[in-house]
Image (cartoon, rainbow, N blue to C red; front, side, top):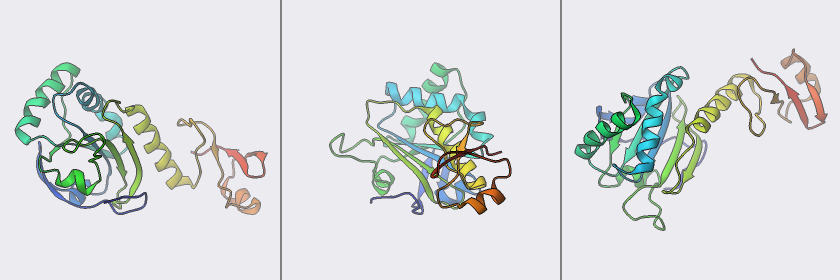
Length: 209
């Protein structure tokens, strides 16, 4: 199933390390960071999950719930958690979905046959409180994800939603943002009281609170 930005994230019921969940109900009024892993007890996956666990407060303060998926069993997940916590000196509290029958991995198009027929690639879905997919990223099995980039794009999405702005390349919180081209001069005066700098008629820099 091909999923696109703006689609409603498919709902499902799954067994996790924190019990059975219905995905939409679990998200509730939060954002979700849904990320998949090829397998338990693998080096790259362990570093990714451990890093997310270490950054639990960063996700919580943004009202974002992380949730992982691996195509291994729940029994394997529980044993793997001990390794993750030990190697990363953390105490992981977000759920890992067990998907040994690949049902959810296939629902979210996480199985890429050129990589593997049985293990999911490193998929990322950022899902908003309305259960809409806002960002998709796909990494090959050999390449670990940048968790800092995940936090950055969540910050950008939330600011864009709140203030109606665009973020330029490499934007970080507190830096200049861009006024959408669809906003005309009169609307800009009304909406962006702090002013802006016109680089080109279609490039206008401003700040957003």
